[in-house]
Length: 309
Image 1 (cartoon, rainbow, N blue to C red):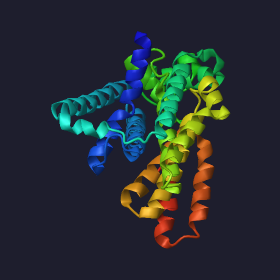
Image 2 (image 1 turned 45 degrees about the vertical axis):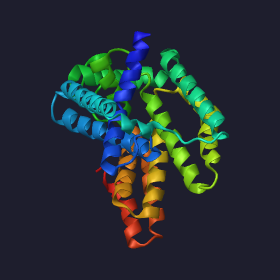
Image 3 (image 1 turned 135 degrees about the horizontal axis):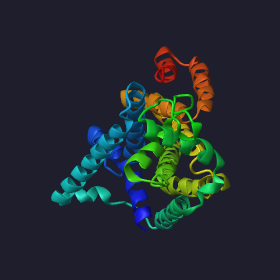
Image 4 (image 1 turned 180 degrees about the vertical axis):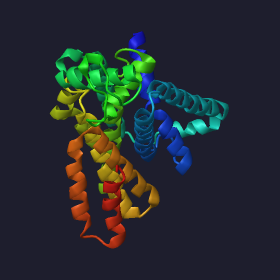
């Protein structure tokens, strides 16, 4: 049980501080779907980019993990203390749900609990790629303190593969201990869930119940259930999450023409590439498709492609 609680704490610290920052920056409610989507993207982007900078220029990556953990704890505790001191702000947690929506929300909560339990307790030995590649890579990062050649399992911790998930696993191993990262993929399920909710809300604004049906259907898809039970520690879940987020942010940027959406469209594309190299094909397609739009819209495609470099 203590291990499970540690997994919850680690997953919480890997996403919630970003949600707090975004909600304060754009003056949105903490439970606004936009706060959750952009908050997860922001904190993942900060962690990934800073980890690569520190890991490529020094051997102090483990120290960076502790500093980033401390920053996450400070932001989370500050928000909690502030909310407790200002009880009137607790109204931001109120959900205006109609009677037909309550069963759908309850179903989503039950499905999320089920997914979290499967991720937390399913046997790791069924995930071959994670055991033979991602976990040794993470241990190589911890043992060498950076993206340098490592003697662990004769494995190299150089930047020869996309590093996002292995760096997350290294963070967990360095600060929280073995298997503490089991619920990190759950944050990507949450990201996709809120993206599906917002897209459904944009497509059918007059039918709120549809916005809850879509996430519930998503969580019951066979491909999702198989992924969380057999491939939770692979790179497919983050690739799916950041691809969905990039599509959502791109569409929203084209609709509202606001700088923040263009920025986060680029951020989600960067995170997709750092998750799995196959996403580069999507970036090329995005650039080609963007040619049919006006000059200001083409900027999105080319900016997204150029940001990682």
